[in-house]
Image (cartoon, rainbow, N blue to C red):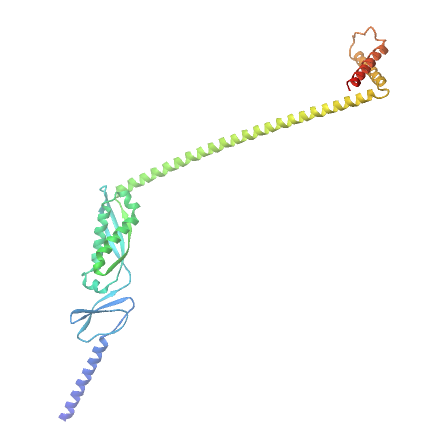
Length: 318
């Protein structure tokens, strides 16, 4: 009976020892997730860093001292009061983006790198704002962000931390400054409106003057062209009449020089003489009658003699 009891106790202890050993082994098998780092200490001293994958710890000797995410994360930088170069107190808050690049340094380089990074960002921001007037703080946001990143990243490098970005979320001046800025902006907008209106009126007047000038030029060009056309028309008319007259005279001269031409001219002159004398008798109640009115033949003979003399003179000249 005693042997049986001793055998049961022994088996019981073996069972618990085996169970404890299995638990101990399973507890010291670690699966590290992606983008995560485990800091392993052996007998209280840094041993190695485990990254993503399956790892086995030596029971009772190795332990996981720190766990770090290698992903980029954001830290809210609380609002703080900063004094500008022109002695205006403004409230500035931002957000800091960073990530762990060296898990060992992040574990042993500093106690709390999040708190330290926030404090560095705040003190750096106060220093930068102190070198700028109020107006520049609104215009130089990108420059301020870059300077904060450079300063904080340089300070956190021994801690295994990489600062990737810093963004100013808000710059809030005092209420009195905000009111003054709003009045200034309102005045500036009104000024721009007046300037734009005056420029519009000026442009309209210039356009109107140019239109009047173009109209006068077009009118003068039209008048000039009209006069040129009229002059050309008159010149053409005079030239045509002269040519017609010359042609008529040439034809008359040719007719006079032909057989019977002299008699025809004399007859034509006598007919015109009688016609004109008749018209004069119709239009006037009183008229002067030539003394040789009945001697038409003598008048015609004189005209014929003149034509004959002219013809002989032309022939002798040729």
